[in-house]
Image (tube, rainbow, N blue to C red; front, side, top):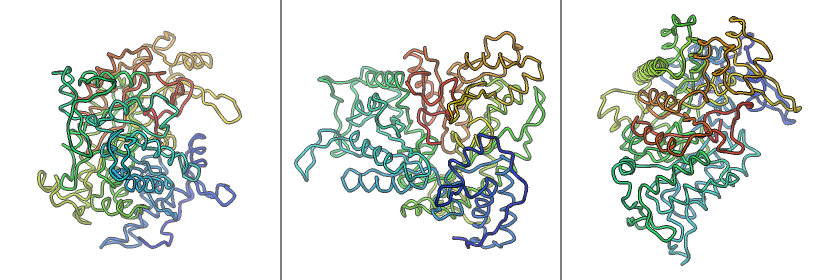
Length: 605
């Protein structure tokens, strides 16, 4: 660890924080005294984080306090100006006693009582510090299977998932934020039907997102031979057999229809394309990828962790209108600085689980992504549902991915390759020295986008005008800042019109607004689902890890549309997909008149 002496004192300049950003800082991030009173300002927090992360410079051969202070100033400016922000645990814990700075964890769940409860213990320790955890429950023997030691029968993975969920609920009181989990089961597990329906009662597993890991063979069978008997494998014995439930044998097509129906009704489960994940596994010599973090964007090996950070794309927009562009030079420089920041975080982060520290430092995975895409499209007057937007998204992610890998390669020359580089895809296939096994991820940025005052991740804006509920029961009307500017500049602003937009949830049918403005300022409910999917695919083609993105469907969408989106996601080469039909949940994360939705049915952010 670097020395604990303060390396950096914040400059006097205050940050330009919105009222909502200040509320989030106070409720979630700022240090509090023993009475619960806030005892630091947002700028103090950023100075604390910048100093702690830059302190890692002292751990390397050419490190010096002068060099560390210079980098602390760079890191502080990036965060203060809302150009780049790290994941929440870094903001919460850097420079503090807990010291766990990563957001994403995957923990193995072995098929024994000892293994299961060891994983629960590790979950509690990680979530207490603000991390989110993912699990593949496929190793657990199915319901009704023999338990040799007791002579009884197993209760199956779903029953143990409920234990994990209750543990997360129990530690929630003392944790920084609500515990978040991803539960995964292979499509060839004998209890797959029970897993598919396990969140039909939405009062259960409330801190879990669910995904089914499917193989290419299963997806191909859906199209080519849906009447084929679905084969499942007992993880205890290794034996394969046709899936029998409800007194009959189930076909591949029937299993898929059960998935589609449950997704249509509740928004879960999602799909995880297992073979796609492992085709891009940077360290196959260390094992197969089987699970992800809670929002699905970060596949990880057992015990592995990853820290994330996101660049606010809207801060690089130059000019407006069709002649607008991005400041690519500044963007490339920011990517380089952000990669150094995240690599430093790997160096100083301390996990409460020793095995996590070992493999995370051996692979040094980091995840740099973006937020503010929708804002940037507004600024450049590019409709989200257009080929120009898809091309722009792909251009941006290509640029980020290339710059991030160049920066990691430069750090490898300065600091050395990641310890598991030998035998990795970087050594065997690409012959390229890298400091980090993986460098790019697109996260939901649900909370940090509020701090940055930008749209979350690569999602479209959910609503241009909405009512925000505040603590005393009042509702305040909030208008997207870019739309508000356009309304005033074009002369169609009025309080009455804004109230109407809040009620209707869209401006598409309001002829009082110029047609070109209606074309540009689209929100999630205006988009045909295929545009969501095309945008995710554009970013996925140039990303080491995966993408947190929801394929939004209108409330009247049919099961056929859900079925088609899953198949198209597979054809487009996605690594995972979440489909959500509006109003399919009684208490969904965000309705048109409320804000807080980050792009997942349940989001840790």
